[in-house]
Length: 180
Image (cartoon, rainbow, N blue to C red; front, side, top):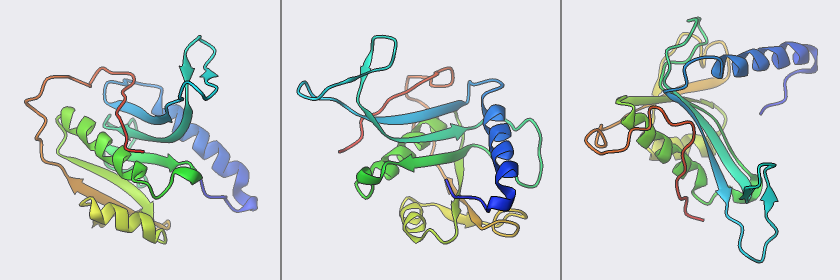
């Protein structure tokens, strides 16, 4: 999401491709991507996804991963890990990012995990305020914030959903209503 220095552009592209390939190449029982979609009204033209189903505009997405990492190196974040949160420009400052985080926390709790981690750019004051308001706290790490410009944050979750029915551990997709 951040433009790399032109000198290292190819390196960053290959590194990101390797990261994405690593995300989808093994057990997906504790890995989900959440997508927020603006529903289309009957007056609005709808989009066909190629399979005959109609969807509205994608307004946000994020990724949650509680799988054990294949390889452990200094820049591997602890799990479960929330990442790749993106909200469309015209949808920002409406609570969508917070709703995506809360929906992710509910899923992580259903996976019987007691905490969730994320990284944020240290200079992103708006995001830091949002995460702090949701109960995330800074965690010291030997790589994040030392060898890059991000901060590692963690929130301890209360396993309030462990007795509820509905196991999301084998889901390939999930949906939740977001306030718009």
